[in-house]
Image (cartoon, rainbow, N blue to C red; front, side):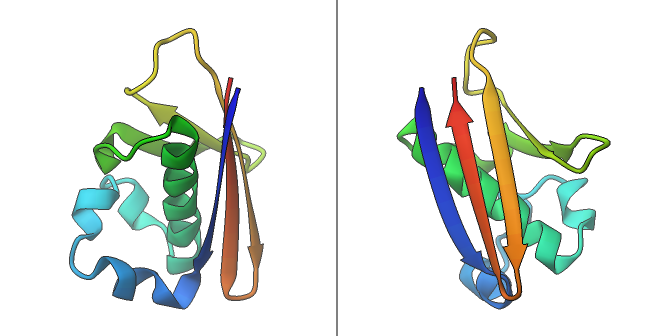
Length: 101
């Protein structure tokens, strides 16, 4: 089991990434509002921390279950490994935790 965590300040996200949004987010992720996009970024960062290395940002996708719980999907893991994720929003900040089992 591996765990990763990340904290993002929503207002700093676009500054931090500059014009590189399409290199980090899929077209479907780019449709999210700024706060939710920051959550997706935090989830991807937390995934890479759990993985132990950075790779292609577009090899990690974030969707949401009907309940709103985030679902992290990646082509970087074998099919027998599972990913559990959680994200929380508090004002200007978003925190995400990813566990690879």
